[in-house]
Image 1 (cartoon, helix red, strand yellow):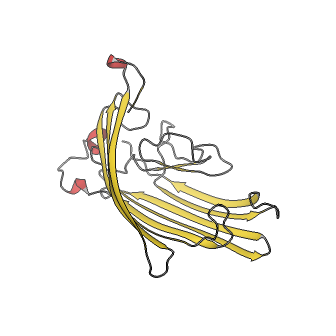
Image 2 (tube, helix red, strand yellow):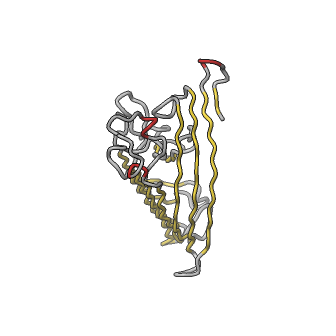
Image 3 (tube, one colour):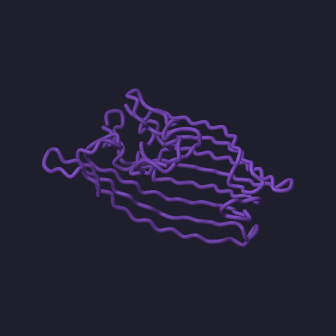
Amino acid sequence: MQSNGSSGDSRQSIDINGISVSLTKRLKWPDDFFIFSQGVSFQNYTLNNYSSVFTFSDGYSNNLSYLISLGRNSVDKPTYPTSGSDLSLSLQLTPPYSLFNKIDYTTATDQERFKWLEYYKAKFQAYFYVNPIDKFVASLRFKTGYLGSYNRKVGDSPFERFYLGGDGLSGFALDGRELIGMRGYSNNALTPTNVSNSFIGANNIYQIYCRNPVSRITQSIRNNLFAFICRSRKYLA
């Protein structure tokens, strides 16, 4: 629970309750580096005059989703890898409520629209590390993510979006957002905004990142080269 500490009409608060169950298994085929994971999670958000993060200030929203992922990690060192790769592919999805809930989304409010969140979210990332000569290590990283909707009339979910730039550590993640760090930019510098200049997050991203060490003494000093693309569709009326 989070609130402004006030009472009566001036009180602002949000209650978040949730539960998740997951199962992860290391596979023996095609090789021992593969990991398979799946799980179900549920979060309930109850808002009282709370409008700093969500598209509505009063009401509640439920997020019931299923997550399945497949990964392969063969890097030689977890901190400063010099060889191997780290690959992962995941899909997170909710039930398509708009197919059977009989809500008229042409006139529905944001609270009615997002009472039960519906979306699908796919992510893929690939990190490769190569040590071609001596202590020179080249790292190529590719990352992409996409947040989609089943029904255009419902629109894109304001939850589970991508917020880009900076250290990737600062900011609230109450709405399930993912903070994507990017060196050389301040926090949220690459995050799309709406007509009111408020951050709304991106619903798909593409990132390519290359790295090599500058110092032969320590690999913690590196040159970096990257390209970053993000895009967002408007989900606010």
